[in-house]
Length: 265
Figure (tube, one colour):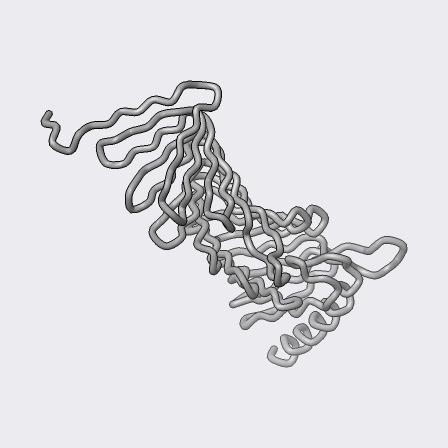
C-alpha cells in the first residue's frame, strides 16, 4: 500500500506540474509557474472525473502564494487547441488559509474559479490580516484577482489599532504604492456604516475610505456623536488620523445638538 501511495504522489505531482504551466493566470496571481500540490494523508488522481484530491493538511503553492486546507480538490479540463490539461476550479474545505507576502486570509470553505479569477470563502471567523489592519465578515469573503478587489459581506469590519469601520458590505481596492508594493488604498462601504474611534461614533448609509490619507467621506443620514454632542447632516468627512470630523450640508441642512456637560436630566 505504501508503494502504491508513493506512486500516486509522484505521478500526480508530475501531472500537476505539466497541466498548470499552460495557464496564463492561476492560483491567486500565480502566473505561469507550476502548481506544487502536497498532502500528508493522500493525493489521489480521479482520471474519469478529471480531478485530483489532496487530503490531510493539503497545500497548493505557486509563486509565493499558498493555499492550505484539510482537503483540496483540483478540477482540470482539456486546454484549447490540444494545449494540454488546465486546472479551472479548486475547492478547499476545512481550516482554509491563503497566505501571501502581504496578507493572510482565513475561512472554513472556499472555491477558486480560474475563469472568473475569483476566490470565495464562507464559514465562521472569516478574516483578512495585513499590515494595514484586519478585515472580518460574517457571511462571505471574496477576492477578485483581475479587478484587484476584496469584498466582505455581512457585518463587514475593517479594524486598525483603536479605530473600526463597519458596514453591511465592504469593498477593498488594491493598488501599488510608489515602491511598487501592493496595498489596500481605498475601501468603499454600503449599508449601516458605523465608525468608532476613542472619541466619537459616526453613522451613515455609505462612504469611501482613503486608506492612504485616513479620510472617510460619508453620505446619507450622517450622524456624528461625541459624548453628549450630536451633529446631523447629509455628508461628512472623518479623518481617522487626526480625529477631526467635518459635517457638510450637501443637499440638506446641518443640525447640531450640543448639551453642556453640567446639564441634568
